[in-house]
Length: 336
Image (tube, rainbow, N blue to C red; front, side):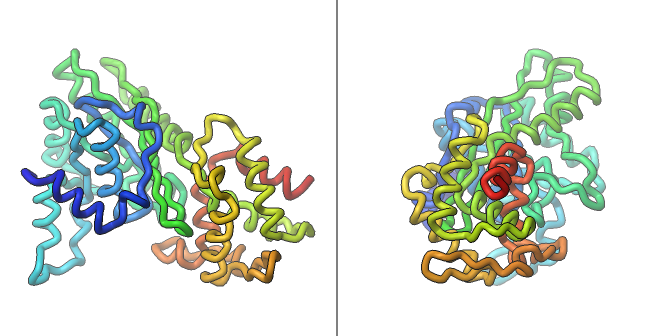
C-alpha cells in the first residue's frame, strides 16, 4: 500500500493503459473524499482500470478501495509465486458476500466513509455475462445498494455528504480501447427511507447507462444484427456502413458520449471492427461487400461466460440495448 502509485504505474505499462485507456468527463469526478464510485462490470480488469482512472480524474486526490466478493478466489490455488487472496489484501480490497451479507462485512465500508475514505462498488453485483449493464437473473433481482452505505455513514454524521458517483466502463474489442466515463455525482438526502434509497440505486444504474460511451463496434454490431433479424434487402457494404454510422451519431440524442475515433478516422475503425467480426466467423468480407452469416449472427448463446465468445455481435448489441434513440435511428436507416 505504501507503494501503490508506483505499482499502478507498472501495472498500467504492462497492460498498455497509456495508449488503450481513455477518461471521459473527468470534470465530473469528485476531487475529495468521501465518495462511493458505482460502475458497470463486464471484464475482470474493471477494478484495476476504473481505480486507476479515478485516481487520474480526481487529480491524484482519491484512491478507492474496491469491493470484491469473498469467494472470487475460492477455486484458485496458491502458487509458488503468490497467494491470490494475500495479493488482493495487500492492495487493500475489502470483501463482501454476494448472497449472505453479514454485518461484519458491511461495517468496514461504513467506517471507511465516516473516516473520509472512498470505495468502488459494482451495483450489478457480478460481471455481466450477456453484456447488459444489469442482468436480471436468478439471485439478482435488483441492483446492489450503494445508497445504503451512504445512509448509514450520514446517519451518525448528519453533516457528512457522501457523493454517489456514476462511472461507466466501455470497451471496443476490435481496437482494445477502453473508456472510463464519469457523470455528475448524486447525493442522498438526510433521513431518507428505504424507498428513497432504492429509487436512488436505480437512478444510479440509469446514469451509468446514460454516460456509457458508444464506439464504432457497438453501432456496427447493431446494424448487422438488425439487418439479419429483419431480413433486410439492403446489401451491406463498407461504404454503406460508414455513411450509416455517421448518420447515427449525427441523429441520436446529443447527450450521448461517442468515442472520438468515430470522428477522427471512421474508415480505419470500421474496417478493424469488420475484421474482428470476420475472425470470429460472423461475417465475411469480399472486396467492399459485408456478408453476414445469418445463423451465427442471430445465434442465442448460453447465458454463461461463453456468451461473448459465441456471439460477440449480440454481446455488443446488449451493451447499448437500453439506448432507444440509437436503436430507433438504426431501424430508420435500415427500414426507411
